[in-house]
Image (cartoon, rainbow, N blue to C red):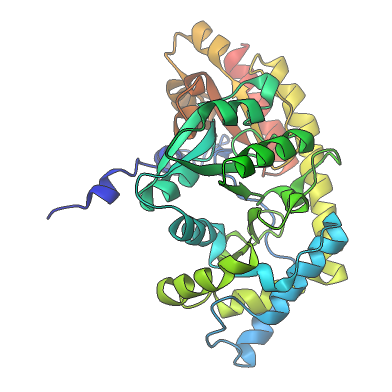
Length: 395
């Protein structure tokens, strides 16, 4: 069977290879006193709050399960619009919001609508691997631009200007970022947008972790910079609805009918039950619970980052959002005689029964020195992980 060149260009998602190994190890040690602690997957341990679950059940019981418009329920688009106003102080008309089958579908729609064969999209290195594969699937090319800790592992306006070429179509950013949990300084983001506009390009920004910002300096939406910004968001992270597969895009008005046409053909609509449930996300009771959980994520970060640093797994830039720690394991590798973070991740699984993600997925510049920890786990599990890593690394 001949496989398409498009499919062959997509690299494996290595985090899933680690996850499979972690699952095998978990089965091996399931009945011991050292079960595997999973800090490799970026999925909140919290599930949808009670009101959201009840809304889903009510939708099913009342028969509200048929297709919705391709752009999403009008009531949900308005609820998202209102949330932008109350949470971020940004006016985003509901008419610019497109509800999608997760942020993945949002990125796919945006890339298909805006990228032609041969177009280049600038992205930071490190960055979330699936984002560059969405570009590739649209027959564009993701150009990874190396970043530094001093730049918060984010693109700068100077680097965007220097990397811009004849084939450059725009930039795809993420703030806060996976894998680093760092955000772009708002003033630098404004300068990046100016550079992109000067070249007639597009600015796409992944804001799926924006609700989990822990620093007011960075917890601002890029949508405040103008109606030409394209923002991708999701109900998965802040709203704790990962498996519900529901997200959205905010786009310029002229792009809405284009996305509607694509969505009609590719997806018909996002899950109706998930949309009905998501309406309850914006009820006061649910929002209060989300804020309580956000404080818990911050408390986990505040414990875990210093603990990693004490183990010599240095986090060069403290994350200001999301639930990740991007830690330099090169000193530990040298001590243990390991080649890189790939070997370190499997050694941590074998010796400490702690599953983490090696840097290989996230780029090529210095990523072999880094591992990503997810702190989307209970405080008790984080303490257990640190204790085990300490026993292994500092016997």
